[in-house]
Length: 213
Image (cartoon, rainbow, N blue to C red):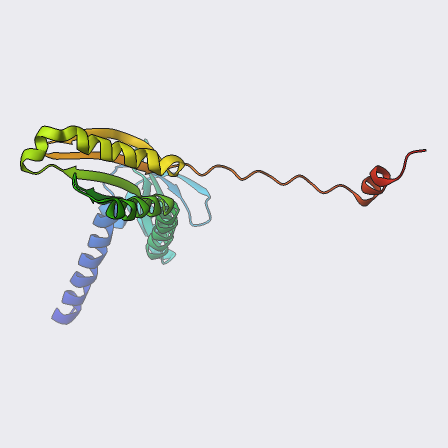
């Protein structure tokens, strides 16, 4: 084998090893067990074999030997196309990730001296975040002598909670951390819409509207 062929083969091995390490899956010569239970590409049981014998069968079929259940006794390996196996695995993982709802915590900052107009703006912003499915962190920083009047800050955050109403659920009640008062509000669960009553059949409507003798 030429130097170029050796280098190319080494690059392919490194790339394959990186893919295996990424998914923590042993394949082919990386399988260390003395005996393995083998399943062929059609899902048929081939019994318990030494790895080298199973790998020989896989190579003859132009496929790979993939360890699919390493904790079993003996480990379970499948003869299959490793590239296609990774593709299907990534596809299923991506589908699972798409189904997951990612909840973001968005901060809305208040102050003791916030006027009514700005308060309404920030309240509406918090309600919008909640209706979009995000959590809201309502925070209020006390500055200087304002720490002596913390009840004003509590009153403002508690008012926000009251004004939000059914749009949110308080996850953490207002509490102090250093000079910052904050509360966490989560989106309210969507209530199931009332199912419309089925329309009456025409015969029933006619009978109900007919004059009685």
